[in-house]
Amino acid sequence: MAAADEALDGGASAPLPRLTPKYMREMYPSYLELVQAQVFFRHGERSPVQMRLFPEREWPFCDRSNYLHSEFMKAIGRFVPKEEPMPVPDTDMMMKKRLQCDGSKTEDKEDASCYTKRTATMKTGLEYERAKWTLRLGTASLDSRANGENCSQDPRMCNAGQLTDVGLHSLERVGGYLRELYVDKLGILPRAIDGADTSRPVSDWLYIRATDYSRVLQSTFALLTGLYPQRTAASSGSGGSSASTLSTASFDGSFLRRFPIHTRMHSMETMHGNYACYNFIKQFVDPPISEARELKWIDDVYRQATQLRSIGPAVKRILDKPHFGSTFHPVYDELQSLVAHGVPLPHDVNHDLLASLGRVAHHQWTGPTQLVSGQRLGFSRLIREVAATMGQAADYSQARAKGAEGSGSGSGSGSGPGAAGAGLPPRLGESQRKGDLLLSTDGGIREETASEIPRIPKLALYGGHDITVGPLAIVMGSQTREWLPFASALTFELFRDKTDGSHYVRAQLNDQVLQVATCEPFGKHHPKLGSSVCTLDAFFEHVQPLLASDADISAECGNFPTIE
Image (cartoon, rainbow, N blue to C red; front, side, top):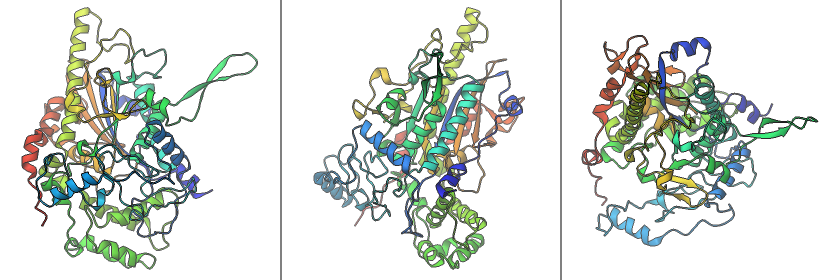
């Protein structure tokens, strides 16, 4: 079996719960109504972002991924063939950014940001993209050679940091899991988005958002194809009847018209952490390796990795040079990508050492987000969005229940999200969709019209990164020391107890329910389900120290040092 085929069977993606009858009874008892689920997921398996250990290695795992990428970029009018030159940078904008970096004043100083070598193709508007792997909404990729990009025309070959066919498979699996749970077993979503059980637009009950990285957008596509597999009518034989059969979905204009996917300019994105905040990012400036090795267990891992016969010298060159976030992560990431695609590790690298490298990388990267100050400065805006969306759903749930009681219709559970007679929920609040742009076939990437603004969702999907899901999981009590697997999913579920109308919140990372310390005292969790199911008030109490206005966060972030 080829390495690509072996990888599709396993990969390195996150474990998901088995939805057995016992699991469903314990997690979703009949007296609880699931009001809303918000799911943050990491993209699937990809090629290394930078190829330092094995710069000559080819990654022939992107046959389907390359085709889907071309489809998508053509659909939104942002496709430039690989052989054509990229658009010329806007020199006026470049000069404005240089002036600001030099400390000079500009007329538009608030909107300008420092121009550096890392933004060498920055323009004032949305960028075109050829076979690179970010949409660059207000930012730009590194030079292809600096990124180790493979410029081969072989249709199977991956560029640096590209979602692979293995990653597509992993996210289809996550989408299938969400379908089994929320469609088949709990029935909070319609069985088909264009079937007889729904007469409402998708945006009335499903909110979809992804960062502007192509690997995340493609992962979002794959998850949606698992959640709602595309079916076509096929003749069943001489009787002339037809049966529904699965077909392969295309990431084209038709798909974008069915599923409204939102993204944001980089400067407006809340799923990366607030890297415009000086007092936040300065905590990620990695100390010299000599300081990091003062921790004995890190020193042990450093010595074992740098003494490897196969890659020790290359590892030492990487570890001895400071990197933003973690010196160890580039080594771990490249080795883990091999494992994810069924490629053997070097003969003297075992999985125990790989896991240790991951633990050091996790320790270095997540250190700031273990602190209240790091969570507040880096993720206040994102946590505020989660809490506001949850609060809107709880208010609407309560109003519906009261309305049902007044009409004598019982529990007020309705007849599903597609029921024509159910009252429409309000539009999603402006604070939760600030900066949202719609991926559209009629305008590329554009602002929504008033009628396209999504309503309070039954299910919200947020496509992001390890640096999205990991910090949020830490906020909710995750104690893991391991690097977050590909295709990891963090779920916030909002429940209503049918017996008394109270609302509760549960957070789950992959197959592990998270324990929130704030919810442990009596009265702050569900009396039957225990302290992992927080009262809604206790959840809000838990995140309250992290919430602040944009003005307060800006003041707490401080100013970047003047560049001499």
